[in-house]
Amino acid sequence: MKVIPTEIPEVLILEPTVYEDTRGFFYESFNSKTFMQQTGLDPVFVQDNHSRSARHVLRGLHYQIRQPQAKLVRVIAGEVFDVAVDLRPSSPSFGRWIGVTLSATNKRQVWVPIGFAHGFLVLSDVAECLYKTTDYWSPQDERCLIWNDPDVAITWPITQQPTLSRKDSAGTPIKKCQLFF
Image 1 (cartoon, helix red, strand yellow):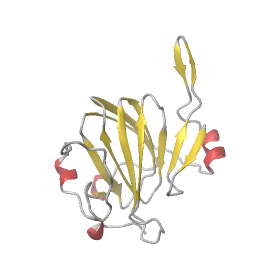
Image 2 (cartoon, rainbow, N blue to C red; image 1 turned 180 degrees about the vertical axis):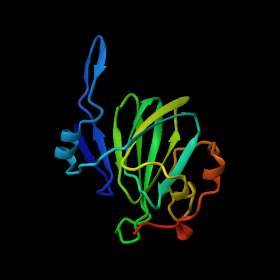
Image 3 (tube, rainbow, N blue to C red; image 1 turned 135 degrees about the horizontal axis):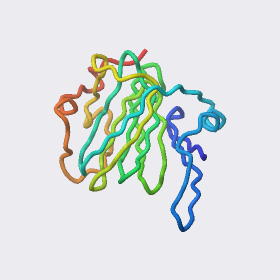
Image 4 (cartoon, rainbow, N blue to C red; image 1 turned 90 degrees about the horizontal axis):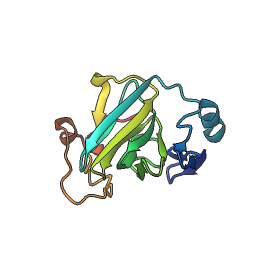
């Protein structure tokens, strides 16, 4: 596994070693020992999530204020533009974001640590995302940073208005968000 640093040091891109031949491919999508050796992190994952979404669907930007979740995100079908936004007021990167293309083809994963809002935009006809979380979903603690907040200024690769859930349409700007720590 190759660890690719981002402009926000806590957010990591992980590139697996893929073994391909005429039959197809094989790779370890997660190995706790390798993850710890390569990143210095030792997360305990308690929940796996699987979503399927159509082109132009934008999910997020979600976070939980209590029971915060770190996430390890990958795409097993299609392609998404995946985003993490730093919501830690004491952080030098507060309010900044990282965006990375995850796809079934590139097999990359992104580590989204606690203290970040997370979301993605589907770039292909459909996309299936799998992500591991370090705490359980807690609907009463879930919050949503509005996807198009001008103070965050995410450069979404977008050609039309995204398809949003009611909850995501009603997200909160960063100036009014309940923040971490």
